[in-house]
Length: 128
Image 1 (tube, rainbow, N blue to C red):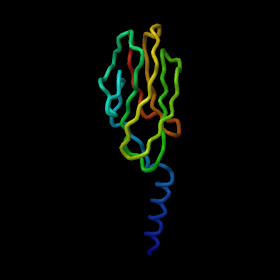
Image 2: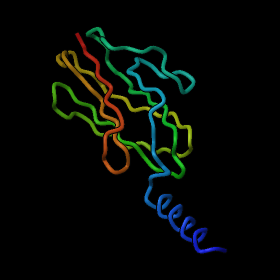
Image 3: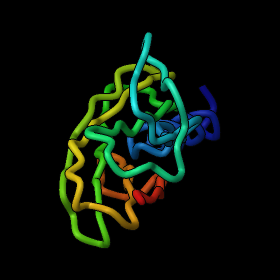
Image 4: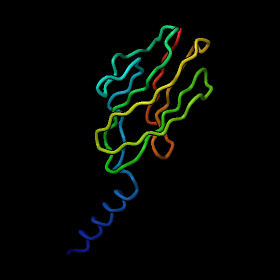
């Protein structure tokens, strides 16, 4: 094997080993009232008060090995929940849920973080 092929092979192995080849992307993300057959029943930006539980559904692509994402649920900039979820294939659907109390009206968001804690996406919504 020539020297440049060996150098190229080494460079490719460094990129794969560094996790660059495992760049997760969010194909779909939504807040929903129910998951049916591993899919969101609806997609809400504004949630009417009185809903007892919500789900944050994400469809993740790009994983080249088992990894995880974390959903961090915020109400008015206060963290209320942190849920670590596995990602086990290059096209993976997963979700977390949050019980909602009637006094928790206002601005919400779910931050989706990769395994290194870096943000992939923010899913904003409001409860009124």
